[in-house]
Image (cartoon, rainbow, N blue to C red):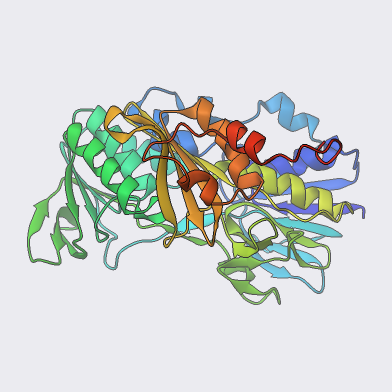
Length: 416
């Protein structure tokens, strides 16, 4: 394998390139990105970059010297437009065709939009340029409506309120971040936003955007009310960036469909937001739009491309920062899971909770409680029985270490 191409030059693509070099692979490496910027981190875009706490260059992941050390052919600002999987070739927008022996697909996602939303004052947030344009617009737009109250929408709303703007958050679900957190945690997030002055319109869909002369003026809701707006942010989720793969011969579903080794076809792997793979730890197929997964999966995909043959079976980790609150979670949080607070109290703004599904702990969540949450992660890693969480009182002081010790066999040598 003398030539490897990586399509996607964000966190996953960069990590795959660095993994190949760190593992000693010294062949010809091409890193293709559709943006002109060097690889940068995306989580700060909806927080520190948007509020102006960070300059744009602080989000860049590697210095020019570090990128040069990769000894890669960087094709930035040159989107891939087609893949011939059988012929092992990637075509670029300018018509060039690049041959490969191995390929890692890390093209991420693209934001969803509303119909007829190509208006002045309407923004999406995915790229660094998006964030800089939205930041500039927020400085001159006192009335902001954010459509969509997932992670991105709630973070943008929090940033705009921090800047002193009038913010309304619209969400068709009954509470914010219902997916993945569920109704109880979503209600707490709603309370958090109300306490900081954000107006919420949950349980109401958007009918259309109103405009005058090509400029957005408001958001009309399903109940026929209209929210006046100088600026509208669409945070409606995203779709895997697989349009360039339509005629590739790869199996495309909710992303690039891969096996447990992140392999989409012989010599072709996928990583990050665009990859759909079978996670053996949970026995289910998943596609994750989490920053930590982008790094971990890229390491796994690059290693398997080099011949490791190790299934990628992570316990996902994700987080959101809003105002003075950090919410973190490990594992998966199915919509029909049971939820139980296991330490602290939600009324104090500091607690941990566990999610149970089919008799085992599948996820744990911490609200301003990172240290204890790291300990509780073991409940998910070891498939702890749900009874270990539900056996005590309403807020049992149960930790993963205590569960582990209570169920550990007394026979030596069973556990390393």
